[in-house]
Image (cartoon, rainbow, N blue to C red; front, side):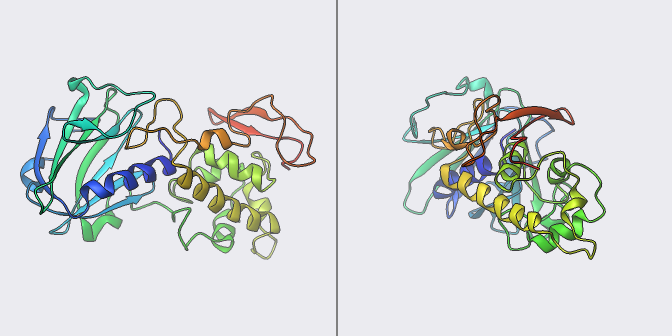
Length: 295
């Protein structure tokens, strides 16, 4: 699954081609993705202008005039391709399928100057989905209603995490992956944030809270590390694990800067550490960490 930085990369790539433009035509090449597409999908959004491209956790939100929003999730293999003058933007180093059978949803965009662009959603495995919701009620949308704060938002603080962690006797990594605690934080960046803050993935979450309920120093460090690792990933354009591609076809490069993720057996990069990156399995998912400097 793409993680938050990948989805943010897609949002930023789509924005110049969708914001302020009108959906002249919506072509649906099949009635469903993971779930059935919304009833009367084309009729409900054709002719509407895109007001803003937004994101909530790992979901894209296309806000339209008339208080209606398209919610899109990329699933395992979904991607958007931008075509202007019938040519794809960018050079696909690891191209996804361009078989028309996998081009399931096509947004024909038009601006006031007569320019057009096609935004093509391609998804060979069809694990992604699209839905419609009222813009003013997005917080009540089933997939959004229980989400925690964004890892880049002002609501994420050490005090907030202390309140959520104080009764948690589960491993810190498992708690951080709970979308009700922090929205959009995934396996890769949890491993990276824990390494940067020197916290072992098996440490109990409540051990980072003082007896009086305040955030311990390690929790302050972890909060900063979460913000930093996500910000760097967004800036770098996403991790592009497996076949994930940026909207314009170019690959991101943050994976080359991972400190522990997928580096089992390699030397820890923490200055003066001398340890070796290890891999363990937690709740069926790989965890990469340095036992020497993460406690």
